[in-house]
Length: 68
Image (tube, rainbow, N blue to C red; front, side):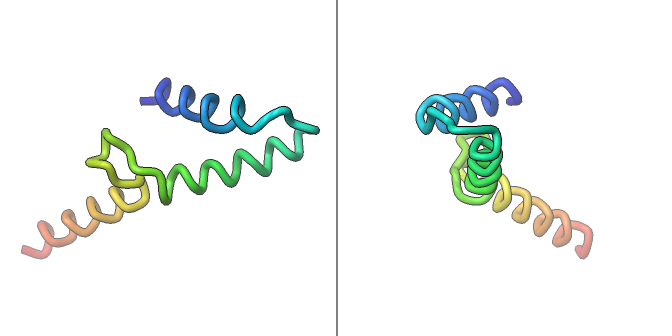
């Protein structure tokens, strides 16, 4: 999965949104991309949910299991 993330990062951000003026511009873009990737982008390995939503769903199901 790490290789897939790195490939997505390079394809979606670095290659398609350059050229970059300086390291600060790249840093801001990386922070924005990481936020979008974790909160909005659906992932096929996670039942087409963003990671944040998938994790929240997992914790809810764990809490329900532990409460029962």
